Image (cartoon, rainbow, N blue to C red; front, side, top):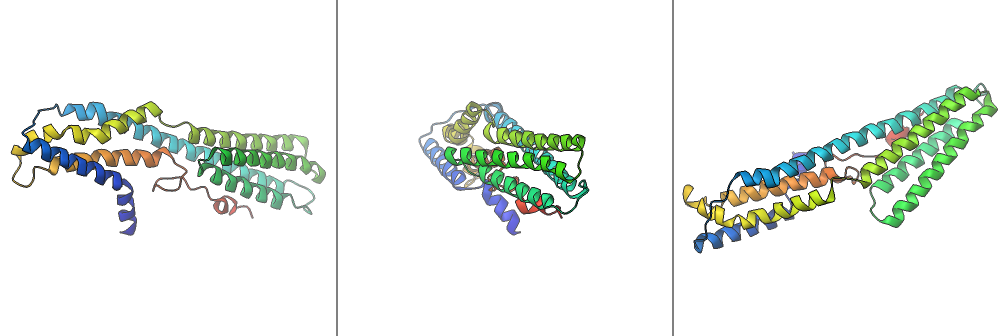
Length: 258
C-alpha cells in the first residue's frame, strides 16, 4: 500500500493542484459571467494527448535502451574479472582484485555522474571514468607476465572497448532526450489548456447535476498534468526519483566477482 501511495504522489503533485485550482477559478468566472463556448473535444487529443503520449513512448524506449547498455557494461566487466581470475597460469597475483576495484570505481563514478547536473562535476567525473578505463586497459596488458597469450589479451582489450562504448551510449542517452521544443510545446498547452477551456466547461455545466459542474475541469487537469509528470520521470532515467528509474549500484555490479 505504501508503494502504491508513493507512486500516486509522484504523478499527483503541487503542479496538479495549482492547475486544478486555476481551472476551477476559470470555470467559475466563465459560468457566472455567462462566457460559454463549444470548443471541439478532438482538439485535446490532437494538440495535447498525442504529443504527450509520443513523448512518453520515446522516453520509455530510451530507458529500455539504457538498460541494455548497462547490461553490456556489466557483462563485459564480469568477463574481464573472470578472465583475470581463470586465464593466468600463475595464480599468485592480485589482478582479479584490482580489476574488481576498478569496476567498482567505474560504476560509482557513473552513478555520481548521471545523478548530477552541474557541468563542472559532470566533466570531472567523466575525466575520472576514462582514467579508470585507462588503468583497466593497462591491467589487461599485465596478464602477459602471468602466462596469458597475446590473442587472449587482444580479446580482453575488445571487452574494455565495449565497456567504453556502453558508457558512451549511456552518456548520450542521458544528455540527448526528447526534443526540447516538443517538450516545451506540450508543457505550455498542458498547463494553459484547463484554464482557457473555462468557457467550454461553463457551457457543459448544464449537462450535469447540481454540484457536479466542476468535475470536468478537475478531471482534465488531473489527467493532463499526470501525463506530463509521468513523462518527466521517464525523461531522466538516472535521477533515482521515479519508480521506473535505473539504479546504478556498484555493490550489485561487483557482487558476482568472487
